[in-house]
Image 1 (cartoon, one colour):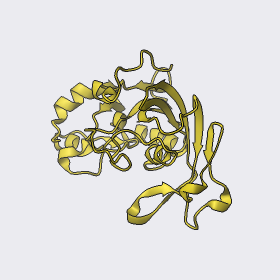
Image 2 (cartoon, rainbow, N blue to C red):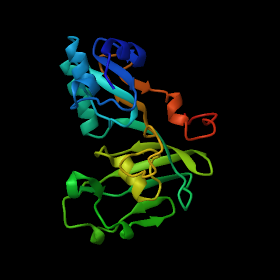
Image 3 (spheres, rainbow, N blue to C red):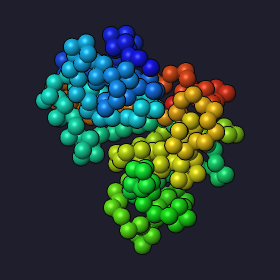
Length: 246
């Protein structure tokens, strides 16, 4: 997907001020680190605009991306991500699975890096315990490797026979955290190339929906951002939910 940066910028802009630019990124485009034809930061720089990514979402994920236009704002915002004080909310459409998800729950599974640099839960799959609304592993079951505490909170938004819509709050911000957590508890994200082997979906149905941060240069001292999911996000369902959680 070649990027026409002026067109993409205008079409996907959510809000902008002297310090930041927030976009509703389409699936299939990287934030940074890719080739110039699929990379927002590189495409902007090719037109003379310097942007500093505050955070990243996966190339296959659509939705809210926050970019800084000034280094002081970049430092203030990235510190909040590093300290895990940002309120992040995603939407996902997942496989209904053999057991339905509870109305809300917590996935408290540490992650590690396995073969071929693939992110995985830092314990054998069969040791994952599920009690009520919580998934976890005992410390004695952890693999003998470096692991990273990882916590995801979720709320069910809508249920369909084959799919469930959930709102996700990643308390920690590990690479591929949401995708790995959901797959390992038996509810992979629809269309995820890492875990959905059906190969019938043109996109991954994970969307960066909301961000809440402090921003001392703004009159109200905060950024409270929302990126509505596009029509393609809802295609696995017969119809989108009538309402989304506040």
